[in-house]
Length: 157
Figure 1 (tube, rainbow, N blue to C red):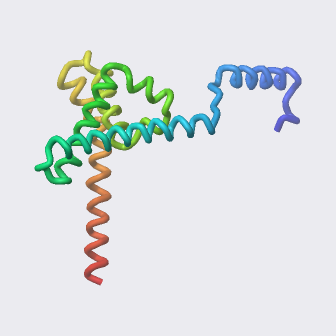
Figure 2: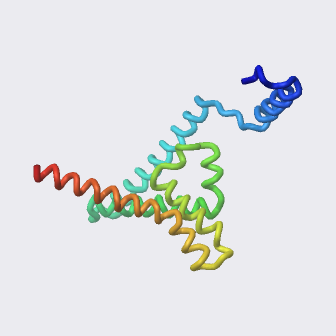
């Protein structure tokens, strides 16, 4: 394809490629994987510590209740960190490690709500909150229904 380009077009393409390389963020895969690993691991360790603290200070609770309280606490921390601007800083360093399903989803919901708060509580915050949550819930319902039907049919056969 470059055989059909004029020298002027070749020079333009070369300048453009140099410009793209200059403004594109450089990414070191090993460094990114390392940071994702330790941020994700730290998040999971904190969640485990929270669960252990619930078990120590409230031994009467069942394991399911402790797991629920731990999840709610980690979600609340992720939302608080999003509101204070800490989550974005953590995500810049930790990349994919910061977006574990529970914390990443909480961050996505809180970010959408905060971004449109100027449009009001109902039409801004609530609507945008559910614009993120809606597709996730719909997919969860659809695919769990499909899985349930498949399991039922396999059991019948």
